[in-house]
Length: 570
Image 1 (cartoon, rainbow, N blue to C red):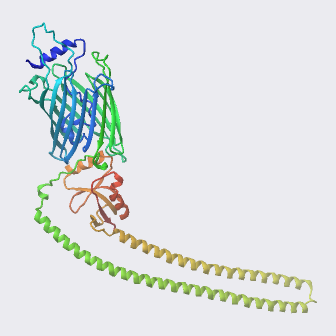
Image 2: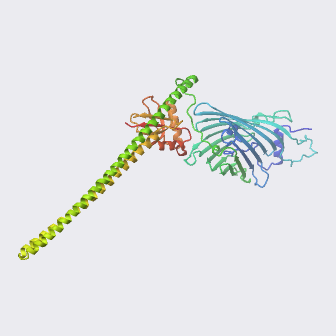
Image 3: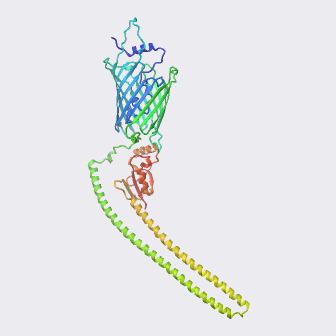
């Protein structure tokens, strides 16, 4: 019994039976996988582009409607092992046009951080699958004296390695679908060196995040794929990815133009679709190809999409290194000093509170006495005014009586004297009115002075309370990182939200550029004391404002740790 001799004989037999159809490449046709299950495209992509920890499904219908069986099915579970490695396990079925492969895939990927800008990731997909003929419509004439090919089910082990070099937002990758393989049924390699499939790819992530979605990005990806006995494939994919949806457009010189997109619901479930139209004259008559992808995120929702930021190198320069023992000793000394200072500060605060209470009581008693004195003064003035009015009234009565007597005695006087008396009466009335108005004005002024004194006392108390409250707010909380200096050069007094401190311009420039790429507007100043660059996000006028900005991660714009640096004015 003769089994499948060489791949060439099988391909020749298959093409003889389907001489009028387009030759379909034998690759996995996974060139559109950009958002989910992209470890099928390059094994190193499981580190971040598979969105671990998640379960994802991808299906493709090649040149056929979706009511038929899919030509490719890929069900994958990916999990992050730690910050630098990931693994996945998958089930797949794939119809190459000649063979129908069914089996599983184990994936592992590891990343090495070469420095703050460059990362090297590598991984592999280990395939184990059964292979059988996908089309048995060609029947060999028994009268023709050629070997009869008996269908069989072969078990094949296949290794697909991949590597990715990332320089800031650039990524360069290489992968192979079948670099090593072994057919356990035939006890030999499954493909010859000329039938190996290789891929090269380059991409660039363009951050377009805003405050509501700092993880959003635009990723163009260019790739080249070598296909046995066919022309090389060249393609371009452009992916727009946000927290709630994604969209992509692509072009492959063999398969044509693709359009796709999808959405994420409840921060866990994602579903999307893609359609691909042939533009090559050889396949323009074929039906469009369809793809459907679905994914469910198992981890915590806040960990579904993380921003990869450039961090300062974890290893400081040699001159800044100190031994662990020295660090421990310094920490113990600092803790002892802090405890002593805290005890002294507590005693000082207790004494200050006591003195403040006594002073407040004295001020309250003094204010009360002043109010009593003011009330007594006002009462005395009112009584004096009343007495003056009474005396004035008596004088008026006496004057009127005297006037009547004089009028009785002066009846005989001439008209001129009566006019003079009338004028005198008018003048006296005006004088009385003026005196009455003066008394009322004095009374009003006295009441106004009382109100002003009370308002000034209340304002003084409010100002004292505000000063005490501000002093209480300015005191560092337990475990709070805080530093305070007196008049630092031309630096404006206030509270600075510090993100990092650099003694080297290289790391300072890289850090500033990274913050600017995130849409932030960082500022910095140099301390004369140590000649270090202090990078801060904003200056605030009060401790409360600075704490609120720190505790809210700068309103969600900056997720790393920050601390407060206060400059006290002269």
